[in-house]
Image (cartoon, rainbow, N blue to C red):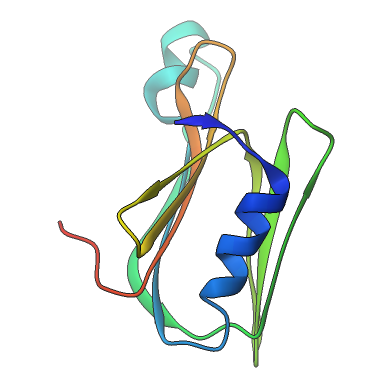
Length: 117
């Protein structure tokens, strides 16, 4: 993965607009939090292969962290804290956010085919 290049990431997000796509969205502080603070709560969300169609996508940020939103007819998909990105083949976009130690904190993936389990 490499640091997000906002113009290129935006263009790839727009390629998926107005199509049926599969989304993977994951947030976690996982076991990271409780290993160092026994009063910390573990939190996370995981959605894999949700089929959606979005009409608009936007990625914005300050050059270090970014947030991406996908506008659907009846709501939004939103990920914040993104730092890195890559493209797998021609049809999968991966946006991820890592903490200062390189641990995964958030992931947003979009593909025109279902993700493998």
